[in-house]
Length: 220
Image 1 (cartoon, rainbow, N blue to C red):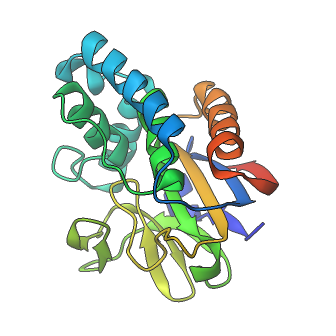
Image 2 (image 1 turned 180 degrees about the vertical axis):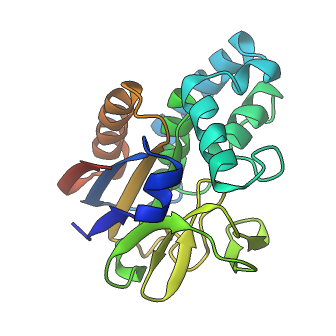
Image 3 (image 1 turned 30 degrees about the vertical axis):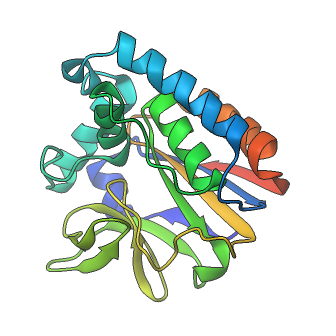
């Protein structure tokens, strides 16, 4: 597994931050009808049972929002990806359809409330460190254009920042050519639910992305 760590700076501000890392070989395809059917069933159930005002009180969302505030970022302005996805679902807009790997990642996220990073391992240089965005630091977020990552919790490698719980970068994005995949489930509150989220992710990766050669590691 590619080395992943949490910076001392972030640990001081958010002592309970925990990462569940899953690295595996995957088969990327544009569409998986069985996955999309499961996704629609889940999102329909969420839309019927959850209200917008309830989302911020979900344990994984609430602790993540506190983590953002501790780092100096407004979670209402820079929404966590899980919160943004859940808001879409509750508003009846459904989830974006990208490819089977990204789609199953989003399914895990709305099912658990955890924001999740998904990366092409071959596009990450050396180790990945989870730290804090620097002053005036930017990158091109997927579907967001230029994103100001100052004070956001951020993953970076030798080439610079590539992922946040708000939006991952285009540079390390998963495409049809991705062979080795890294999923990082981000827990800001040392929640017991992280274990269940990891189990769900592993099962969906095997079921819908043909995942093999899997490595799993939890770290703080």
